[in-house]
Length: 214
Image (cartoon, rainbow, N blue to C red):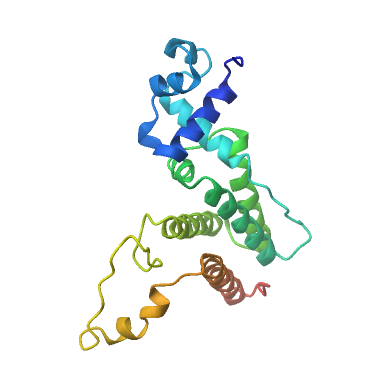
């Protein structure tokens, strides 16, 4: 059996969360997954909270940025948002852990630091940069929830779930838009929303007399 260490313990937690959700995680369950004694885990991870912090940090550390500091801020924002979405799509359940933790490690802070630096360099003040970072996180997580079916409203139909038909007399728009509402190209939907956000940011900069073309 491989030597027990923090990385193996965190990796086991990541796998368990993706299979069964964060509620399934306990030190005893992780020990069982690894075939180790529960007390031996405490030599590497002090408690469940620290373990979940480790999960969040591990997921964020896998974000691959191809950020070009010389590129326009709008394109840099798009690249960073897509990178976060990609890792969130790969680890949908662990992403919920990421957004629930107060990250303090360098691995966990790097993506936020890059995002804030990009927004500040674009011309936004500190308060606006923080608000926009939160806005993008909310947008990406919301998109993710729709993709994985956690929030089924306006998500595409699933063959295993019966869908009611809107009465055209009572709900003419819902009836007319039925085909659009029951289908969804997640990639196209994400890019549509991302473009709206970047354009709105550019408008905000323009209103302040700053350069904000995307």
